Length: 125
Image 1 (tube, rainbow, N blue to C red):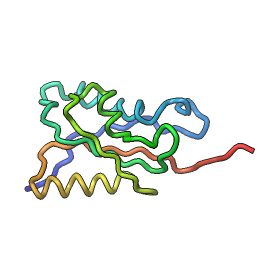
Image 2 (cartoon, one colour; image 1 turned 135 degrees about the vertical axis):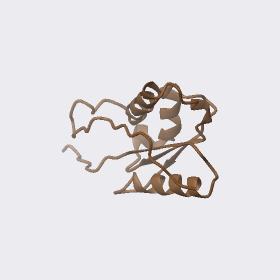
Image 3 (cartoon, rainbow, N blue to C red; image 1 turned 60 degrees about the vertical axis):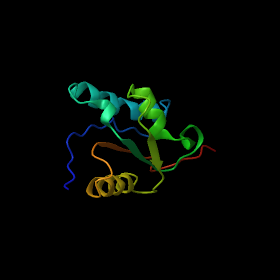
Image 4 (cartoon, rainbow, N blue to C red; image 1 turned 180 degrees about the vertical axis):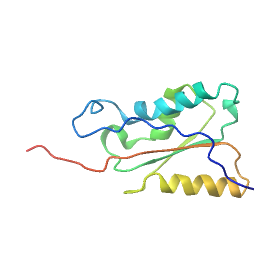
């Protein structure tokens, strides 16, 4: 079995203290999930078997299952599970490997994969 990337969507890139500073990670992650649904209205979204999201530096509001929360906030069916993988420095890589493995082993046919990342943390003094 082959694994294919069919569609890619990304969110804006923010900076420390910038316009996205007050936006929760799961709210931001829901935006491309909604965009995927809008761009692909003929897809049976109930066929999605999992949403896998890599999240680096989970803390505060981001310490819960961001993938599940983003799935619910995006309007995808509640039956779709979400898994958040914590992989520092390369949060996109681990979910991608999980996605490829599940597809190649024929355990899943339709998965959504995403990542969120905070690369720098500054402490105000």
